[in-house]
Image (tube, rainbow, N blue to C red; front, side, top):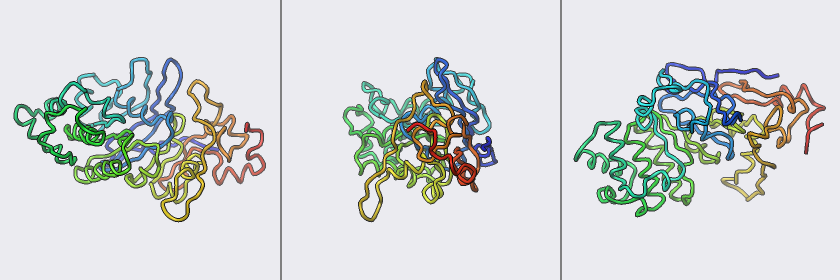
Amino acid sequence: MTHRTDAIAAASPETLLAIESLTVDFNGVRVLRGIDLALSRGEALGIVGESGSGKSVTWLAALGLLPKTAAVSGKVSLGGEALLGLAASRLDHIRGGRIAMIFQDPSSALNPVIRIGRQIGEVLARHQGVSGAGIRAETKRLFDLVSLPDAARRFDAYPHELSGGQNQRVMIAMALAGKPDVLVADEPTTALDATIQAQILDLLTTLRRDTGMALVLISHDLGVVSENCERIMVMYAGSVVEAAPSEAIFASPQHPYTRGLLAALPPFEGELQRLVPIEGQVPEPTHMPPGCAFAPRCPQRMIACQTNLPLLRQTRAAHFTACMAGPDALAAFPATIGEGMPA
């Protein structure tokens, strides 16, 4: 019914970063179940899914930021250089240099007792070799780049003296200090009001276009990534369930989970409509259902979904889906949809 394909992660001359068969286990419990993706230079990739889907864990694993209790396997390469198992000294050079990450909460990512200019200066010194007066000048340039008000005076400020939106701009400036090839933004607008959220997202899009870096935008909001990303990956319970160009995700979603996420979005125009939630919760890694992880919540579930694990397959050009209840499957099992499955 389904077969595995690595086309979604197939390397090409334009591929900058590739992840193949990435898995993560904590104390023998698998939380990430074989992630494949390829990221091209200058591309904007959105990764969406509910909390617990594995979005952040994917990148923490790829960058070697998980605790030692995590067992990580698979392949991660940047410009052809393997990252998993890389010497700590070399990995420290790559993190913050070629790959930078913006975390969800700037208030916890910034050291509250160190002035922000010094914190950015450490990145500049490590990855760009800047020192002395050059640090202050380059920090001001970065603050101007991210539109931080009164940039010259902010060098000597502490994080608590800035608003949440301003601290997020500082985090973006810190990420850009190393001139990264890849910027991973993990829920960069969490806890920000709608106006500041829009400003931060517009800033990230502008910076990507101006610098040529690749952008990975992690979010639980399909609406956010649709406006800022060219391609979207939908994750559920530690796996990729759908991947396609943004337009295709919205015009013709293939996976029931993706359709559920779209149904929960408020309409951008027209009359107000009742939102349709996805019933149930993402399963805990210790209590994964057999077969398809989404089956207990899926309105198109079949008996086969209880025991068969759907793997990614190409359904259309550049469109990949992990579901047995696709057009072909529905024709093959017309009488079994919903039968014999738990409510």
